[in-house]
Amino acid sequence: MRRNEDRTQEKQHPYVPELKHLYQAGRISRREFLRNATLLGVSAAAASTFVASCAPEPTPEATEAPATSEPATPTEPEPSGPVRGGRITMASQVHKVTHPAQFSWASPANQLRQVAEYLTVTDSDNVTHPLLLENWEVSDDLETWTLNLRQGITFNNGDEFVSDDVVFTMNEWLDEEIGSSMLGLVGGYLSPENIEKVDDYTVKLHLDRPEIAVPEHLFHYPALVLNHRTFEGDFIKNPHGTGPYTLDTYSEGERVLLKRRDDYWQMGVDGEPLPYLDELEFIDMGSDMSAWIGAIRSGEVDMFELGDQGGADVYQALEGAEGIVQESITTGQTRVLRMRVDLDPWTDNDVRMALKLCQNHEKILNLAYFGEGEEGQDFHVYPGHPEYCDKPVPTYDPEKAKQLLADAGYPDGLDVEIAVGSGWPDVVSYAEILKEDAKAGGFNITINTMPNSQYWEQWTEVGLGITPWTHRPLGTMVLNLAYIGDENGDPLSWNETRWVDEEFSSLLSEANRTLDVEKRREIFCDLEQIQWERGSIGIPFWRNVWQVYRDNVKNVSAHPTLYLLINEAWKEA
Image 1: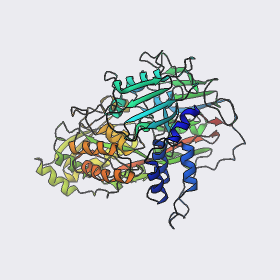
Image 2: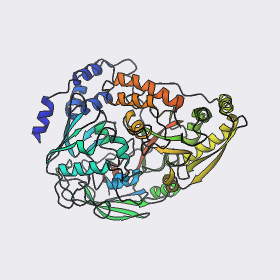
Image 3: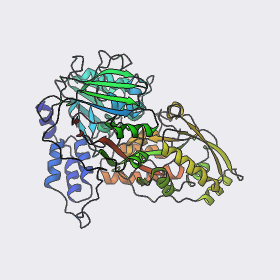
């Protein structure tokens, strides 16, 4: 395995010196440097060492103490080392699952990522590292990616993890009949015939176009690596993964129980194999957050798995609660007001713009999400993305909205229905606020409230709805998933609005192959403007999220996608 590391370090990508110059000049942030350096094959250790030794000169503002988010309740000093044994029980939802590549919920991914794993991992700082990979190498043109696998890893049934598993898993993503969101994410640059098995521990990806986000894509939540020998379409029937736990029980709507593996490949700080815990348990507590809150207050559960649930309402309810920690993190999670451009009246951009102008972004954030986030600008790029181009928040303008409706042929206003999931309180509040504020703009909105599960059954089909979208570390990722078409111009499977714009797609393709962060930001200025002026969505705010746990749960941290990265978690008695 040292052979791969040495080879990577000897052949440094030619853009790395430029990255170092940009960082030393203060033109990119520490996070942007780390992300791009590791992308280009620099080890995380080497990149961190450079950052520590060559920090840019601080500005007066930078020397001020940054604002921090304190836990709701002070915690006791941690003991000298982790405790082995015990169980962490989590409030969650337990959905029906079969094929991991078909996941459209974060909860089953959070449960089963403890059993199976990913090739890479994006940490809480938005930096991506190898996981089942030892490292990766990328060609100067970003079109050839060499994936060097870790050796000596086994699945929980004893099979060795090898290149055939990677090739098999990727082919599952690219199978149109499976209908994975991975197809929309990677299918634009990768095809089955361009996945090359070099040897048992090396896979080469020959891309159809340059792509900067390959490592991040490998951590997309449906990208769990499968055992090619045993997987037959239903992971629950053959739950063979490389992760730290084995699947004991998976009962839809009830419970998931995972048990510790004795032969897991990662080691703890005590020199023994992880994990420290004996068991992880997920209890389905439905979508009523009051039940969750009561359970953690009483100690019935130790922790929340909030991948598809909760938000500021949970934070408000538990603020200051004794023995409970709430760790916050700013994210690209949002609620998207989405309009299908192939269905009337949303075929007319004047109508779409009219509805967007009926959003009072500040009011929606404050009332629907208690002000716990940042205002959005009606394009799907958030301020934490490295490519983000700063633009003003659109103004609430019902008079202009009314005029646009008249121009579109609706001088007397327009009746529309909006679909929302009842289990997302901020979504329901958003719809209710919009309903009231849109009256002045000529819209008469009927809210069709339904269970979250029912919404997800039709989320791509309704004419007007509000869809939760999770955080992704790069601005290119969600745009490639949700706002472009295939080679024939037909919307991709997760393009819920059916909006495909030729200029937008061309610029996005250019951004996908642009390494220079500043140049990519210039492209994003145009992408954001196009999505605002003629796009199919409104985004009033970006959400803060919280990791919620009792203070005897140790070594867990908040992740912007609320992914559970808890291999090293432990629990005090």
